[in-house]
Each structure stands twice: as structure tokens, then as C-alpha cells.
Length: 462
Ligand SMILES: Nc1ncnc2c1ncn2[C@@H]1O[C@H](COP(=O)(O)OP(=O)(O)OP(=O)(O)O)[C@@H](O)[C@H]1O
Image (cartoon, rainbow, N blue to C red; front, side, top):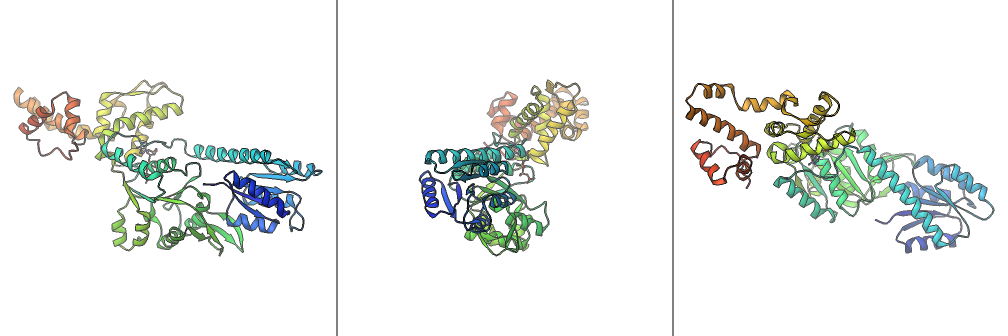
């Protein structure tokens, strides 16, 4: 995406010259001859940088007043002030007023390009920094080794560059936002913003103002998320929570990549890739008349599904280790290891809150551990709800049956319970179970048959 530069100068030949120099370098340039047309251009879309001549002849606002207006509307927009020979004082005042830099006329193109590159790069770093700060604790990779995660990763890689719309489905806390961020990071839009629009947290009116921005009497009160995402990706989280009126507006954006702000009539053009997510079944929502079918087809060009953690238990060890390592790094602590017992308990549990719940459990366990330098996470440190599944799976009556039986039957009872838990732990995958428990795959198959477990293995994915 070419960076968009707004050139404000009262001299037509300078405007054209500067626009030419910038365009030759791959920027896109817009020009304005006075303060009113500059403000109109700003209202159309926030540029990446403004080049402002402080000596504006025949303009309603002079250069410094216009700078004030620009800063009031877009406090973070970098502005480079151009000053004529002899009005260096004005340039200095402009920098005090928030201009990023200044350049004196006549100037060499090289010097201009250098300042523009520096100011846009500083702005990009500032934005990147802000977004990194906002997402401390957010994942930059989709951890997991299951077939499901590997195939999601492969799909994301394949479609990242295409710019196609992607709809990510899966229950809460499963990593839909992580997947959307990855898609953005792998796309050629990665240097532009990744913006999240979350329907669930807002009233319908607020949501529209948030997404489309607001205008009053032609003045921009605030730009919307769609504008902020220009050149980048807009992630619409939980689209099924969007009211039908907002769905209609979104549909219009998707058909012609333009919209009007709430309270405004000006058409705003944007180039945004829309990625959306839903934890509800959208077919049901459509059938119930709560979701527009036409919007569904527009959003769902490439479907990506993230199954719940309980359907891919082999992802638990890498995820648990990742969360432990990340939390320890944030606190500048050594990373605790997770013992085999603790891992077995983690893998037996069902994780209704998926990866988010796992992350909370790991963090809570590290926080609550005695001493301040935890070396390992052992099973008895895990919260009771996690441990209870394993003990429920080995019911007391099995223990009684073992103690009250001759050795041969006791061994069978034990083997049955033991294998039931191990197979579940590896999501029914016999090869992985066999390798973990140290048995040949064919021997395990025979054993399961003898114990009458052959049909209760669950989903085998070999
Ligand atoms: N595969 C993964 N690798 C690394 N971290 C993950 C993974 N899946 C989820 N997480 C972490 O789990 C938490 C929840 O993930 P995320 O917010 O992406 O879920 P979600 O599906 O968007 O949930 P919701 O719909 O509730 O917002 C985050 O802290 C995220 O970093």
C-alpha cells in the first residue's frame, strides 16, 4: 500500500513538483491550495503525512492556524512544515506547535524525501509500539501440533497474500483473534494497522459510531475504525452479535468499499480487508432471521474453523509450556517446567473455556505457588476443577474393584481405566497413545479388543 501524503501549498508549480518527486518514490500524493481544501482532503481520509507550507496566500486560515486545526483533528498525524527563506521563526513556532519537522525553500528533493521517510517511519514505529503495548500478552503465533492447527496454519498462510475475506469460527477462547492477527502479519498489509471491532461490548448505536465514525454539520467528530484500518485489516469479532441494521451497513462497505460516517453524507473510500469471527453457528442465526444470508456469503469467502481444545488434546503440552514461558518472561522469572503428572491432568480435563482458560490456569498456578521462584508445576498445584476430571475418570468403585479382586482381574480393571484415560488424552489417536505408553501399535489394538475397549476409543485421527 502506497503511503498517502497531503501537500498543502499555495503555489501550483511547487505542489506539482513535490507531488511528482513523491510519486516517483512510490508515495501517493494529494494536493490542496488553501486551508479549506486541505481540511476537506483530511475529512475525506486521514493521510499518512501532511506537508504544509506555513506561508499560505489567499487562504482562510494561515499556516499555523491550519496546523492547529490539523492537530486538533488528528493529534498523531505527522506534519512537515515548509517555510520560505526568512520565515524560519514561523517554522520554529510550528515545531513547537507539534510539527514533526521543517524544511526551508528552496530545497533539494533528496532532503525532502529523507524527511518524509523519517517522519512516516517514526509514525509507523509509534503506531507499532502502541499496538504492541496494547497487545502485550497477545500471541504472535498459533501454537499447536494437532492436525487441526496445522491445517488452519496452512490455510492462513495460503490465503494471507490473496486479500480474500476470511471467516473464523470456533468456540470462545479458542484462538480466533490470534488466527486473525497471523493472517494480517503474513499478508502484504502487515505494515498497515490491524484494527478490532467488537460487537459484543457495545450498544448498537455506539457500534455504528465506532465502526463508521461520526460527523456533525460536516465536521468530523471522530474517524471510525474502518478509516483507521485503511490499507490494513479490520477484524470484526463476534459478527453474530451485530444488529441487523449494522449488518446492512457492513454489507454496503463490502460491496463498494465506501461508506458514510454516522451523521454525515460524504462518501469515504477505504481499502480494508475484513476478517470476521463467530462462536455461534451462523446457519442457525440465518435460519432464525438474526443474520443476513447475503452478508454471510460475502464474509465467508474462506472459512477457517478452530475446534475446541478438548478435540485436540495433543495441543495442550505445547500450549501449556508456551503460556508458562510467556508469563515467566513477563515477570522476569525462570520458566517452570510442567511435570508429567501435571501434564497428564491438564490433558484429561475438558477446558470449556479453551486456550484462554488454560492460560488463566497456568498463570494462576504460577502466582499462587509458594516461594517466588517456581521451578516446576506439579499436579497438586493445579486447581481442583482440573484435577477432579482425572479422579472422576478413575471412580472409587474401580479402586474398590481392584482391591477386592484377584490379581488377574485387578490388573484388567486397572489396565482398562489406565488405557481409557490415555486414549482420551491423545484424542483417540492410537499411534500416539502406543508410543507414549511404550507399546507396539498392533499390540495396543489387540489389548483394547481383549479389554472390550475397541469401540470406545472416540475419534481416531491417524
Ligand atoms: N493456538 C494458540 N497459540 C497461542 N495462544 C493461543 C492460542 N489459542 C489461543 N491462545 C491464547 O488464548 C487466549 C484467547 O485467544 P483469542 O482471544 O484469540 O480467542 P477467541 O477465539 O478470539 O476468543 P473470543 O471469541 O472469546 O474472543 C489469548 O490469550 C490467546 O493469546
